[in-house]
Amino acid sequence: MKAIVTGGAGFIGSHMVELLLNKGYNVTAIDDFSNGQIENVELFKNHQNYRFYNINLSKEFDDTIFEGIEYVFHMAALADIVPSIENPVKYHQANVLGTLRILEACRKHNIKKLVYSASSSCYGIPKEFPTNETAEIRPEYPYAFTKYIGEQYVMFWNKLYKLPVISLRYFNVFGTRAKTNDTYGAVFKVFLKQKLENTPLTIVGDGIQTRDFTYVTDVVKANLIAAESDING
Image (cartoon, rainbow, N blue to C red; front, side, top):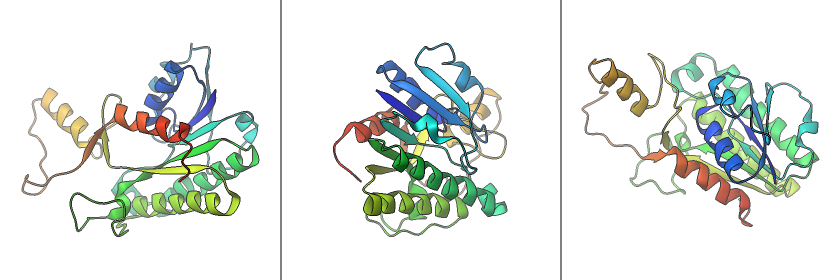
């Protein structure tokens, strides 16, 4: 079986690549290193079933790499809240236009199923907990909005062109290879960095707020189940 993972040099994407390779898939990873890390490519470079392409998906690219592909896991995106507020056009190009180009490549080459990495940020600050999938959509910043627009494109391509798709709205994913820096990053990785450096933990608010966290292995397994299922989104 053959699969493409966009964002394959990223945190979740590289774990998706690893799972697929372990399952015996031939994997093509795509990334432009906007968020991804070269270390996550080096992990698999000697694997006989692994190929990597440095491609900016918001620009035209050679889609012949989609020939013979059965499953596409579209995980490439620009993330983080503040940068999306500072540069919304860049986020639209990456998260919306990039998704549209992937959809067209999938349609052209008759892939078996596309699994789209959506985001729970589309709910904004939910009014109810636990938050139901049918909760009101209330994006509050460009990252959330562009990811939701991408999801709408995905579902519309299913409706209009009968492209087999499914969309998974991730909550807060944590695990190995999570990327962070001094300004942005997953809370677990930020806390670990501060703990190792023996600096105070950065607590925002009163400290009693809660969030829904998911371990990265559970997320990639859900993607594989979604891809191999006969249920269309």
